[in-house]
Image (cartoon, rainbow over all chains, first blue to last red; front, side, top):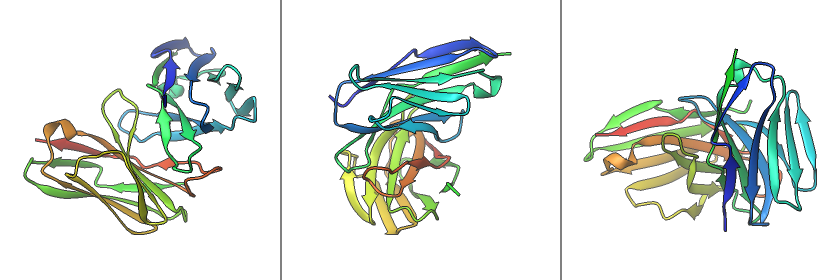
Length: 113
Length: 114
């Protein structure tokens, strides 16, 4: 099954709080897990990505945690800001050398001032 | 520079029209993609080009016709579209289709079929 399940569908966080978005997959034929941020009317922008041989990756306020045995990965946004309000998509890429990305359904994040 | 440029930004076309969407990247990437995104949904892969050859067609109707004239350009030719084809069409590129290849998206073309 080539699915990536993402939760929650929407999230409201106070400014300065931590935003946490979770994704789970079943197919083990994935080799790369990026997160994209999308503002209304714009294309998705690559935020941060991780490979399954790494358990955590941090870039600024954004951290990916990866649990290979549980087939789960999550995005943590520390010190969330109103400018972080956007839709976030997790994705997984198949190892078949196709470049094909399977996206989660997306999480709409609202950070309240 | 991680820029993928798409033109036009907006397009309104009738069901009998023929139009084309264009995508350009100058990052030396050898893989290029077309995705379709409906409102409040994730992007859905349509086509993949690798080294200017079509490598994936996700069972897309023939009214959508991709073309890769060279390694920097990707076109999507549209003909006899239906109103349900209205969506944001996204182009993306990556160094290749294998490992260590991050995909970068353009800003999209907002297509409305009337």
